[in-house]
Structure formats: structure tokens, C-alpha cells
Length: 93
Image 1 (cartoon, rainbow, N blue to C red):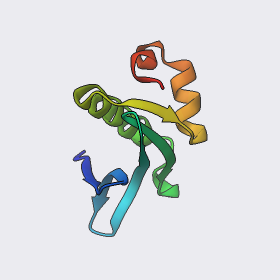
Image 2: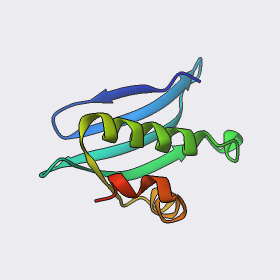
Image 3: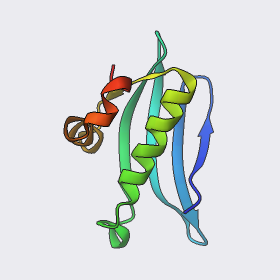
């Protein structure tokens, strides 16, 4: 799976696509103090349950670590995953 990244001054997204377009995405907003707020995670319905959103989240955590960001997991999926995964504590805002 090739996870791509796109961002501008205030927003960004990690996503994967196929010939039909984007089939999974995780979007975020950049805040002051090097914080990114994950506000949305979505996977095309027929592909749900395959761990794609989890891979996008793990990719965003790696991105945060590399760039010294903290993550505010506002999106319900991200919040639950942060609560369950002890290894994400170092990047939680």
C-alpha cells in the first residue's frame, strides 16, 4: 500500500488511492505549538475492516515523530486507537 501525503499551510491528509480515486484518507489541521489535530478518518465502505485506517494512523504517528509534532486525536477512530495503543503516548497532545 502506497500512502501518500498532501498538505498546505493549515491542513493535510494521508491517503491511498486506486484507479477509482482516493479510497482511504486521514485528514488533519495544523495548530499552534506544533500540534496536528486528526479530524477525520474514512475508508471506502467495501474496504472497511482491513486495517487500512490503522495503517494511515500509524503513518501519521510516524510523521509526527519525525517532524516533532504532537497529535490531538479529535476523530473518534483516532481517539479510540490512541486510548488503546500505549506506543502512541509520546505524540499525544
